[in-house]
Length: 380
Length: 212
Image 1 (cartoon, each protein chain N blue to C red):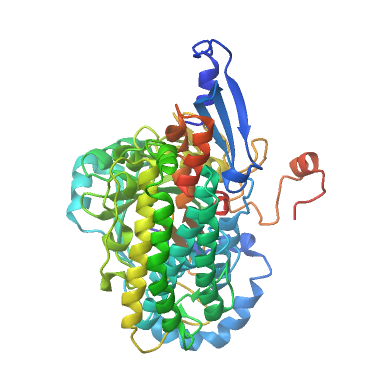
Image 2 (cartoon, each protein chain N blue to C red):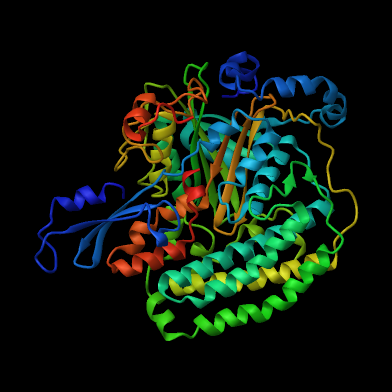
């Protein structure tokens, strides 16, 4: 995939207009690549015939840092990967280390984790929806989405003091007990949110410009998704009814009823429908969770200095972007021997080349948007 | 690789952990050890030999190429000969239905004769199970690329090459992915210090003395 640009360079006379192919650099400073992504596009007229992603502009060596920090010290770093879904990152890391330590967070902690993580999924999807619509030319949804996202960030702020990189969870459970009106705030948000989703739907779902720009754009079938490792809404939009929250439940997901929305074509429109529906499902999970929050401790018995027995563990969660996995190796010391992070954005981005071939340059913007990548996570 | 618990006891990792963080845990270690003990006192068997149908099938088919089968915290691991990794991977996808290569990475154990562990996390949609394949590789060896089996391996192998310097035979375009192409060194190797950098590259391309 990576060398396709060179490959195509060898037979360049095949273009439709008989002209030479054009190489166009998109990014790394381009507003619609959602960060510092650079895509080298090989064009025939306005049609894409090949591409290469150049990434790494945001590489901070997170995995190296992990080997030089204690287990707890590393926890805030994971928030900086997918910084629009920091709570999900934290959940994955904390649960992975808990598995390594062979401890389990208490039920109350697991339920509060679930509530916050689902709110985070809604917030992440909202930011995606707003910017994705903006990329395609619809300005209004962004303001609506930011309005609702603000309410979620306010709940986070009330809970832990931070809005974006929250570091909401600790290894073994939670640092903070839920504040007094958490349930009420979540309920108020969820009650009002149903009508808000309808607003987005009214603006976009039946909008003929929206359909024209997204239907049959960036097709990816189920077999290709699995072969390339694409996960999350991208996989589900291709018709695979699979969600880690159901397949291998973690946190408190096994206690709640929710549906896995799927698409049929695997195009940009389907991915839009899937994410919209996922927000509805996340809302339902939150409502179920606040109804029966168990009482009890919020922290398991873990020492101040964590020394997991030598060995290794792999744990993955369904982050808003897809499978977020942590492979943690312990040598018995106080610092991880190795932490490998399986970033969903990085692996989903691999499918970009296949999805944009044959499309117009304007569609590339739509397809990058529909993959919902966060470069902080791609580059780590 | 079964000696994994043994290896760490040698202070091999001390050099890579000489950051400001290290004195802190050792200072707190004395005071915090007692509360940590009750949880860790009756140590349950962390690693055990893997005795399952799956392991038996692999052993039957590949014999000596399956070096070990074990379970770590209830997660099945097959340790395989790196020379046979490709065919074992293909069998895993085609007959054991591990259609998803969830992750592919490496771990550096510089004291071992074969210093790199290649680690592949497989997932089967059919059976909703996971399997971890591990293969050790000497620094001078090359591994067979798995891109033909799982196209997902493309960028993952480029990342391993970039950060560990492991070479993959038959990869369609093996070059650095996260670091600049002219960068010298492989940062996730244990002998690459956390403060280390390619000073010449930084000076030339960024026009500053240090990226730190």
